[in-house]
Amino acid sequence: MKPVNIMPCNKGCGRKIYFDPSKRSVNDRPIPIDAVTHQPHQCKFEGVDKLKNEVEALKIRLADMETLVNSLHIKERLEVLEKRTEKLDN
Image (cartoon, rainbow, N blue to C red; front, top):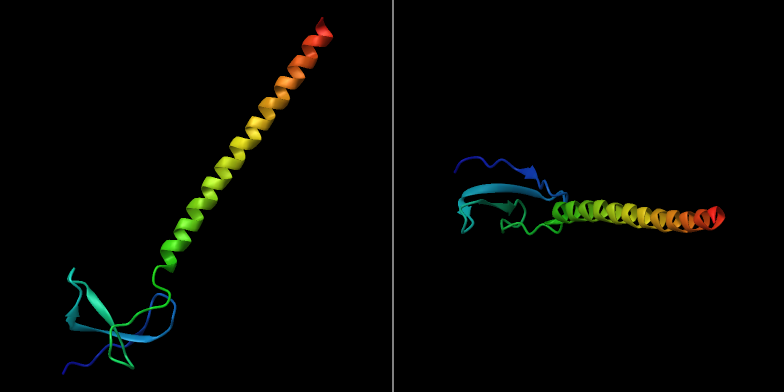
């Protein structure tokens, strides 16, 4: 049997894994194997990067909405000032 290249999981859990060329997903992707149990690795951090990206996208959308709300408040204040100015002119 060929020597196995054991490495830490790159998702952040730190478990030692390896890839067995004979173990592939239905999409023909290599399946990480836990170096201790020799079972497919089920990382508890799977999907964390996707969630981080979604949070960042939501932060950007929130900032855009806050900018819009602030600009609406400025528009309302400007309308009030214009009305006051009109009253002074009359």
